Length: 281
Image (cartoon, rainbow, N blue to C red; front, side, top):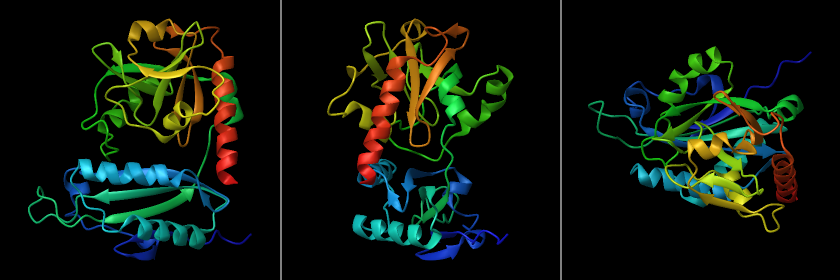
């Protein structure tokens, strides 16, 4: 069988074979973990909800006082060229903006912009049918509105998550629920109201798409969610670019509802799939 064709990345203002794309060790992303990123899905050559992801990328950069070296239209053009070069049927593109090469290992330099594209795996039908388990941890990310590259806490907790037979961790602060490391969180109350935390969270694009549904099958709102309310919820789920709407059936020692993905969660997953299909044209 023929080998897979090499993938390309965009770095230092040009397209480079992925296995030749490097940063110097003086970059603040390496020295101090300073930078921002964003990630979006590409289906059949079309980036989904690209404008929303670009909005958030530039906003994250502004919050960390990093200048994106390309204007928005130029960056969109680079994305289009990268998609054409790699020609992947289903993929994810990651845009990373680093603190740049630092003369003293602390002060930012000229930011480095890099884009990579890789094949994308979405939740399996089995995962959707059975749901996942979460554990909780008291933690708030620095600069919650920005999508930074600092995932130290989530990565550090991986062994604990695995030891407890869970799939991911859900953050809270003093009993008020916020988000997962790579996803937003929703609960379904017993009156079928759907609620997502509104403070100290990243404004997820999938989260936004659910909140903005023109004809939602259920009432969806932002608000305060406590651990006590969460443990008593009828259903719960995570949302993200890669997870879409992923049912949560257990949190810590509390089984939610029937312990199976519920009808509200599955209806919202279908609503999101319909929205994605509209976006693909």
